[in-house]
Length: 120
Image 1 (cartoon, rainbow, N blue to C red):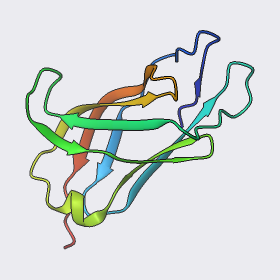
Image 2 (image 1 turned 120 degrees about the vertical axis):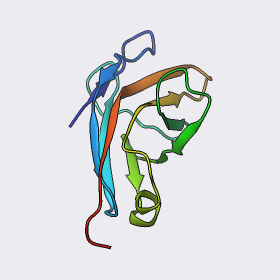
Image 3 (image 1 turned 45 degrees about the vertical axis):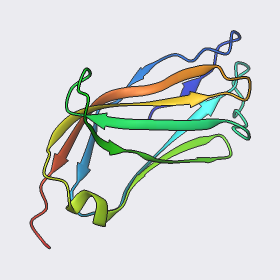
């Protein structure tokens, strides 16, 4: 599981984290965020956004990632009904955090692979 530690400047250290989502299942990953001093970062007042696209420059969004900020954790979730409807199998994604003072930090990026559902 990736962990992001913020730097004194408020910047984050970008992480690459490739994900595999089994189609038709509840998929969740929680990414802890640490303050510059190594303690859990309180994410109250922060916002998060993330998207999946076929490739970086693609104008089409394949999926807007559902993100909850829980304490110091960024929690990504895909519900079974959502992934069951996907016809695509591969893409790229990233997740960005916006601090209360409007600084944008790219938390994580990588490839997405969707493994096809057999049981429906």
